[in-house]
Image (cartoon, rainbow, N blue to C red; front, side, top):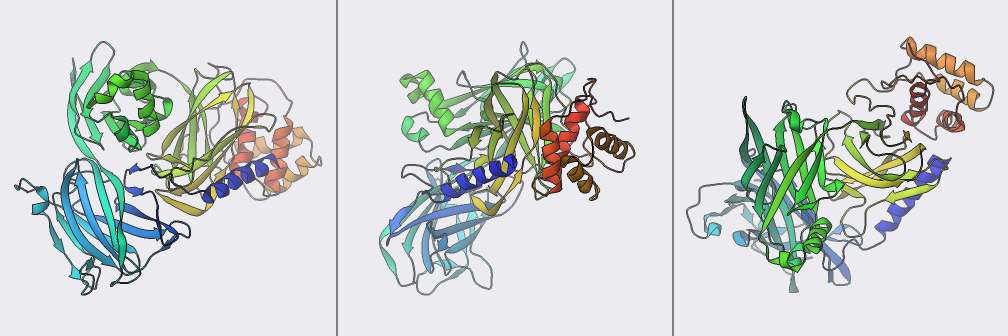
Length: 554
């Protein structure tokens, strides 16, 4: 029942957040492929604009067109306003690239963007052309049988942050103009690959930096510590920092290059200040040939860096990145499955343990084993006594519920007081800036020991997952009710696993000789038999028995 209570707590907090206005007046977001502007009062409604790019992760040169969806709606009821006249303006680095009037009947406008590099005009907007049918009343380009309107020009031809300014000039009727135009600013990031090399005695190592913000320069590799550094134009003025949600850079290095292999730990710095654990993420999943190290520096982290360096730093116009390998390390962790078949790996370095802040790195996958990017989630942690010691469901400054894992990987640092079995509840709440109607849950139980100790290793995600014949639930229920003794139940499970009747993720066999089964495992079996917890939560108990030497699998 503790797990059920745990789930209800997260759900109640998520529901409470839906009743809170999702933006303060001074918050803007710089999304990857989607953004939502702060709301404005309009006729007693709080209205806002969202912009969504498809594909969301747009890299210069990889696609020749993209869809931009602009939505004007009442935030309180999540209802579109009808017959909307938009003035769309697109800027990069303050330079105007496009400006045109559009009209849409249902408040959801789709525009096709076709990047075109060739432009020799001193003012880039003069190279931009527009295609589509014009509404005879509003004069705006709109969608008709011939397709969506098109903007073709020097847009998304260079990586960086783009400002999509949306001015609402009319609403509710093609003839109705608003008394004062409503102005909204949204931002999307476009990625650009830049190529560098690391010199080694046996040849050069290719390095790709994918920048989502601006061109990088002054790439330096230091042979003494194998560190990489580079810089990028950036405005550190506090007024600008208030507008920045995240600065994102990727460093992609061949998996075969040992100093940057997945077995290594890394430390990252921005302008000489070490970034926190959530800002530096290692991704070995997205590419078969490269490891990817992400710098995801949030607005709050940028403010902290400014505070550390003081007011003299405000006038700086560059951002300096440094990545330093720390040598090989080992991990503890586990894999868990959500109710919809999605999965997560949770890992932490073995140098962390009870009595310290533990950075748990959480990696999300879809039901095909692909990295689940741009996912939003909530997390809580119960200690061995069933007391909640941590809860994070996001805050009220974003247009979505939960915590954002933009690359499908995130780190939560949690203070863990003592050794024992802990329960982590993970809830997937939505993707992009869209909330799902119903969150999906996973509630794994796992062990935390002393720093330096090994617990059960992470099962390989792509190996066959749990397979349990349905009739075993009857046995589990009888065992929980005391109708089957401990030895008989364990012996039966041993036989089923050893003879491949039942499959569970690979688990390291413990060498202990204990035979006392904790009460929480029997409770799990009863809850699983009653359908209150999922298969993975039940299997985590079996894995504990194996890793502690109580259940021997040949």
